[in-house]
Length: 384
Image 1 (cartoon, one colour):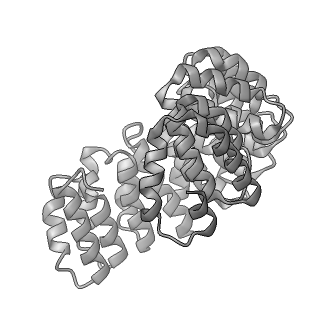
Image 2 (cartoon, rainbow, N blue to C red; image 1 turned 180 degrees about the horizontal axis):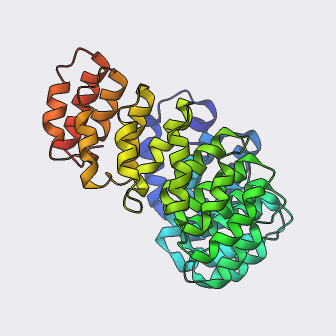
């Protein structure tokens, strides 16, 4: 097996029976030799050999191999570590309690690399009791450790300690930490997350402001409308687009007011933003449906297509707006018809089969292929 990993002259199929036999042998006398070879492969940057050895060690020792495999993962030799991480994850799931004890030691390790891999692994076996440990890691000297700690904090929905740790991370000096914290807060559903996120809307980094807009949209609180309106004028395009979409999710008179202004703008790009967002607010304001009707008749095909995308992103859109899709079925622009094909099963599932069958005979080749794919998804809903 070692010769194979070094020389790579034979197919894996030739060595596979040997690898399988070693993995299933349970022969712990092989462990020192395997660990020696693993260290050699790490020094040589041989990730193929590393993964072969890791699999055998995991098979022979089980969870007892976890410390060695975690240390191997802490060594960056330039690959994506898919194989090695898969072995580690299997061990973590095989014995959560024992794995968690090992992983917690790594979280407080003496190097940033060990702490990072420990935090990554802890995310698979984390318990509510780990919040204190993770809160400490949020203040680590290494920004990557802090970012991983934020990602590993248990669900803060009902845990005030976890929630406070995420709010603290919003003030981190590293932008990736702030982005991670904003993202996590956006999924909490907690109204008290709105204030800290709104305070971050003036962050100097566009990527942070963009995530703030997205997170505020996820929370869906009317209290975020003013901050999102300000972000509509942001110098960064992605921030503006996320703010517009978030306003649709927030809903309410103030948010709809801002989107209606965009919908009436001469710039078709702004009308596209409004078209994508407004359907989400259709149930919160009677002005939305008439405006969507106008956007579905817009002279720009991109705006008409965006109206359909908005209906789909709103969970299919209100049932009384499905007529917007039906009136665009025969749109002269193939881009719009293609969008109809993609969203039909979400917006008008009862009419979708007939629409898609018609489209399989359309003169646009791309639409014919797309319709066939979507029709197959309707016929075989579990096939993706």
